[in-house]
Amino acid sequence: GAYAHFETIPTRWNDTDAQSHVNNAVYHFYIDDAVNLHLARSGVSNDVRRFTSENSCRYLRQLSWPTPVEVGLRVRLGRASAAYQLGLFAEGETDASAIGTFTHIYVDARGKPCRMDESVRTALEPLVPDDGL
Image (cartoon, rainbow, N blue to C red; front, side):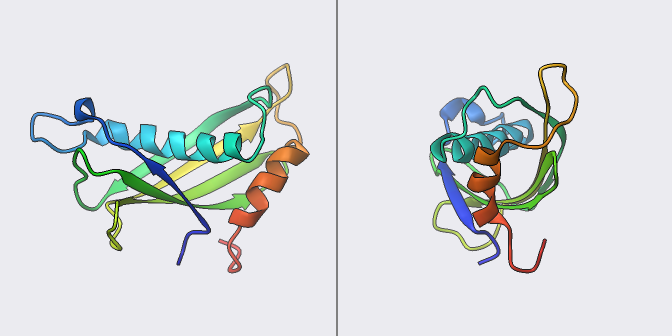
């Protein structure tokens, strides 16, 4: 209930490490994929310039192939930024396997922060929690 939207990301055999669980670095790919899939599915063009200014991941329990990962999204919006909080869950589980953060900064052609495109704001406003995050 803490997340307004979920994206399901398939795991791949090569996501696993020598201990047969998803490698820690791969969690960051899942986070990035979930954010950008949501934007793309919501009609945000890849021409809208953005870069990742910060990300983190706190690992709570292992994920493993072939179980898909359900990534919950919620966001705090600024003028030029979107700061996400994400929960990564093994499909069908209610306890998170990881908690992540991910921040996009929207930039102009010179790479300077600018007001985010209205299409982005429209795509992300439903992900803003009632508690203000």
